[in-house]
Length: 247
Image (cartoon, rainbow, N blue to C red; front, side, top):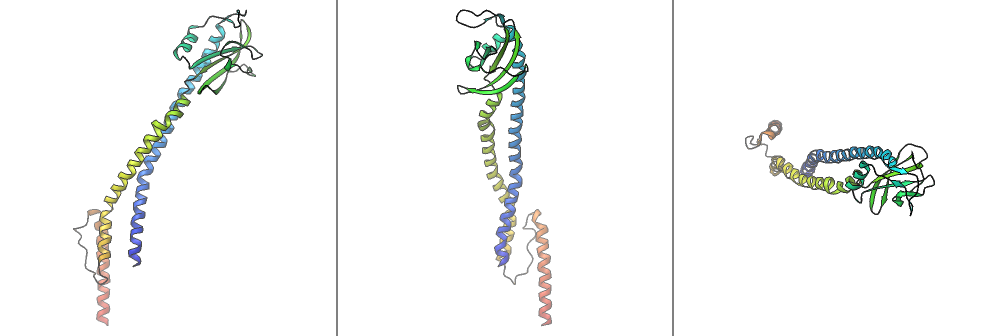
């Protein structure tokens, strides 16, 4: 009775272990895929930062006059790379030039902020009107004196990655893992069917039935187990016969 109660649990435990062992690599591959995608986006973001910091001196050199125009602002002649930067991404590229007091001299006022404490470029991300901007600010010397220039790029790869990870990475991998789990569970159940059939055949036997199990009717992978059972039946049968003769 104890053997009949434990057999299903042992079979189910083996099936669960096989399922976990086969599904775990798929889950690991999904996480690796997400990690590589993030690293790719991070590399693109690094290139974006390098591009922004390279445009900073060009934006400062675009200031050609220190006299304010009527209505405010500086006299500027945009360098071609700055014009290209502003035209390629309309609505996702902006600039600002402020004086040491934080007053906007040209460009977008929402980019106005206190000047950096050093002359080194400072990077940070800021959200404005639903867009996450990658911003670089730097204090520079120009014909208008000391100014702080800021460039902002709204096509932040980190932001695009965070939006796309759900639909391009997590969701497809989740569907794949779910389908794989059903397929592997079916395959494992089919693979363990000879063991289940052997278990049922042994359970249906009478306690006095110690005849050998047909080895040819069992799959090749199960035959070593069948041979071991037959040897056990033979030993038990011989022992029982010896007891009967003794009695």
